[in-house]
Length: 244
Image 1 (spheres, helix red, strand yellow):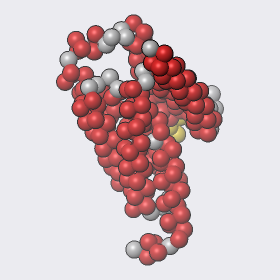
Image 2: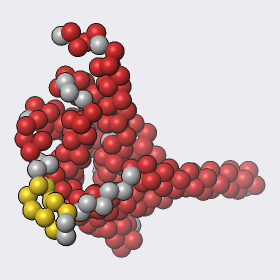
Image 3: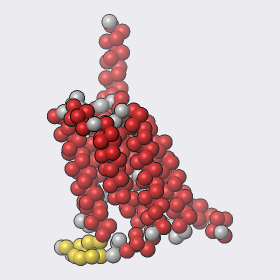
Image 4: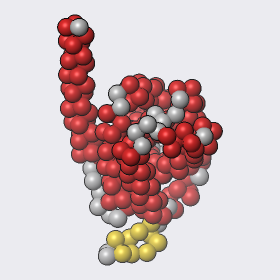
């Protein structure tokens, strides 16, 4: 337990926690979009259950460090790019996000009233969303844990960083989900983010690494523009209400 008094360990914990929070943004956006389709009570349960699953998945993977490290071992080579199981998982998860975002956009355009969702049944829809959260949790967990292994050497440090990051993600997911629910136009923006994230996962799996900073800057810029539009609309409504 001597490592607890080591300042370098605490520095790595702070750095790793920040990195895990940043990497968790993708997961928050995905969960927020999915739960926005559910009634408030079910949405809260789905969000809590989804983030709890993400935490459990990451801790289990940390315990299976040897297996996780093995995922980066090359399986075969395509066009001089060595493909590992991690790459396969990222490509599969990216394609799933692309499909899911496209499907949600199609549903928003063709079925804005959510009639098909109502016909599917509340319990069936809830379980389907939980299943999708589990799938994407596993994909993001692999990328997150591979990063953690490269930044820290002590499993307790990794577990602590992941736990703190998941708590912050849970706190952050509440206002994000509420904002998306109150402002329907932001859901389309979030779906566009999922397309961007899915594309980056596929590219990363194929050996074309896109720096996360570029992606998050684009997301922040688009969010800023949409926030201005929302403020303008709110101001217009207040002016109309005053005139009435």
